[in-house]
Amino acid sequence: MPGGGQLRLGVFTVPYSDLPFEQVLDRLAGMGVQAVELGTGNYPGSAHCDPDVLLDDEPKRRSLRSAVESRGMIISALSQHGNPLHPDSAIAGSSHETWKKTVRLASLLEVPVVNAFSGCPGSDETARLPNWVTCWWPTEFSEILEWQWSSRVIPYWQGEGAFAESEGVRIAFEMHPGFVVYNPESLLRLRDAVGPVIGANFDPSHLFWQGIDPVEAIKVVAAAGALYHVHAKDTYLDRANVARNGVLDTKPFGRYLDRSWSFRTVGYGQPEKTWRDIVSALRTIGYDGAVSIEHEDGLLSIDEGMTKAIAFLRTILYTDAQTEMWWVSG
Image 1 (cartoon, rainbow, N blue to C red):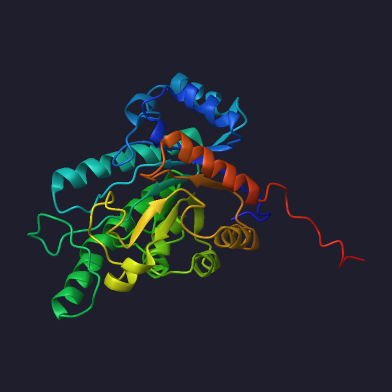
Image 2 (image 1 turned 90 degrees about the vertical axis):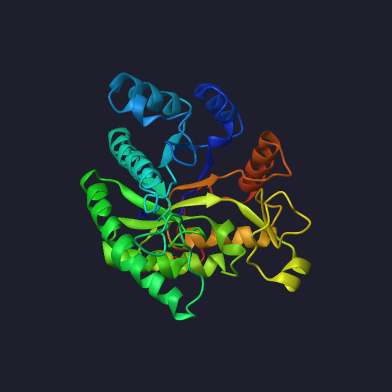
């Protein structure tokens, strides 16, 4: 991970999937965006970067890169969040194929990072649906968890980690509840089993509601050399609902008044001081890359959410390279 802490303002373009790619780039460039993260399939879709179109068409790949670079931007990552460990073989197979194509495409485009979910298996060989284990007892749960990791998670990602390494691409897992990698501990457990090809797409929004301090999480992930990409998404915690029901919440996202937490545009969930601390931590550990806005705020339109998030981050991101401490030199 290079030093310097020079951050680029980025955007995950998926919310603009209904618009032509170059029109999206023009809109974002006009707002000062310096990096784009592109969806390539699975949950994010592939409207702006379709591996099936681009893998065998070098002129189209060159055109995509030129469209980005001519506007003074970079492609920070390709994103294909899916569940290749799903117990339904059709779903797992589709996620797996998209993952493979995305890694190959990232290599050809010279994009160093592919963002992903770790996936979640079922409870055993006969399961039809994923089973995310959140407690150790009764003992059936700890047995499920051990089976998942030893029989599905580690073997799959050992193979796919080797594949990604052979393509010169790093895997950045979003620590996302519902999948086996959901916090720094589970991320580093998988990294220890697979190797340094695995790191984090660090998204604070999923950590806020779990009660994880993002600054401490940045420190522990960075200490392992595992911070590869960063998302900017916020979470609002409804303290009254948390006090009544805790943070585990299965109500639909649209029930804002009833939920314990909701995703928000940056600046509308946690205090500005929290985000300043996150940015400062990124500089402190030497992160030199994109902070990519992921808009998932149901209270704001796409345009308004993006505009507000960009304006907020532009006031707090460090844009100059870190310099010597003049007051202690000499």
